[in-house]
Length: 153
Image 1: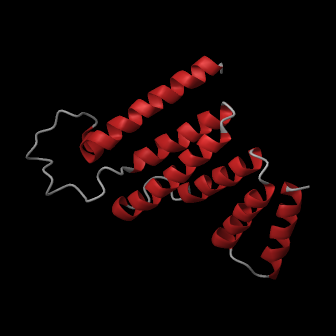
Image 2 (image 1 turned 90 degrees about the vertical axis):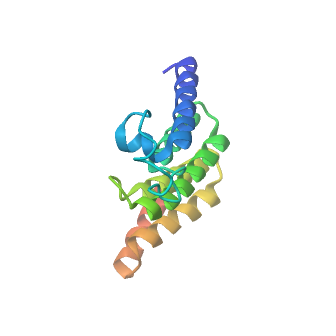
């Protein structure tokens, strides 16, 4: 993809984010915004309607495009924001169709640090991921050490 294509894609994702933040739950439940107000009154909308799970996907994709453009610091911010939205929306709506979204976002954050040549921060993130998702016992500890050596060799 060219830089122009990437910039245009990023612009469309920003528009999509704005739409989801504005329309929230109504848009996602019906696929259209011209719903009857009484059917979707504020009495029926969860308190986090402005933090819809789709926003996390949009922010993640923005981060990916920014990384492709070489803007790793801005990408890191998008990934962190996506993680915050995912954590909030998963509490309000449930995990949804991607229960591993948190893990994927954590890996993207660690990868971003690695792209920024912040090896210590990247390694810390990778270790935290291993601990959080895989636990620890002797065999797993050996496997973790092997993976870490391969990542940072």
